Image (cartoon, rainbow, N blue to C red; front, side, top):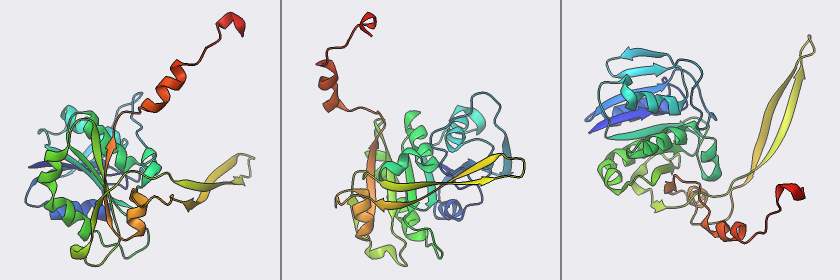
Length: 251
């Protein structure tokens, strides 16, 4: 199988290198950002060229966003058409509504938008030591299954706990949770009076839904979430259709 790897932590990420190692029996092409692009969401570069630097036989460092990496790869920057996209392993979880901001999730979403099976994978921990192998080996063992389960309506988001041995790790199918944060704005005033702002915050809660991805991780389980590509809320459609809208001249 031809696998396209990417991430948002950058080409030198340990999580990315772990995937390259466990997929050694496949033809692996890596197109990943040349530095950290965490939190860049689904941004794409439109107003300037994107630099690609070949750093190995099938490894490329990209000057753009994670979504740029996937777009360039499928549009001809590499000489093959991959069978599947695997993005990660992200250093830290991508749970619930966090996937809106995640560059790792965006790379998988872009692959699915371009018509290819795509998986995002994250470890639900930030502090070392991080054991990437249980999650990486799970994806490697189930790669063909995920490829066959996929359809163009979704990408697959996987989060796994930071465990020493993944052989007993329970796998559950979940949906994204609603995440809540207490955000704070911190500032610094430079000598020239320019003000620099820093966003700081902490997680308040991830909801108490045991069937969500957050609920699975809290219980020490591996979470597999099929994530719908289209931002559709059918239950709200009729509410808007039944509304009597004012005409412009009534404003």
